[in-house]
Image (cartoon, rainbow, N blue to C red; front, side, top):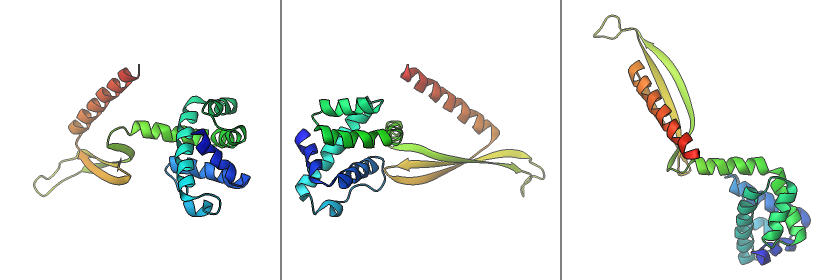
Length: 182
């Protein structure tokens, strides 16, 4: 892995910082690395090796470090050259919160679907064509679920009794999650 990280030295200092930040962007599910930008300095195989090695190193290092010195020490243990380690450690330090937030999102979405957002609306049904006066409160709940990079919306319309059952089951699920954490 260290020899692959040494490929970062083939890039200009600004380009190496840009490469590391683009790798972090890709890790955080944003616009990541593009070979075309580095094709003058790296062959396709060198680019692929450097990209894989750098992303693997970023994952390992970001999980272990809490300050810039920890990042640099972790990189040295992984065999990164000192100057390359400095560039990576600086980038990790600047983007540490963003990387950790992505790690949390990744671990929170361990199932195929994960809840991204929700929207709640209340309605009061006053009457219908069959009954003159109902006056029943209803809750409209829209759940935005992320599933394999796609987003879908599930809409629920719940009466008071159904809402009570949903809240009870969610509280039970929360208790199980809390027990698993301890």
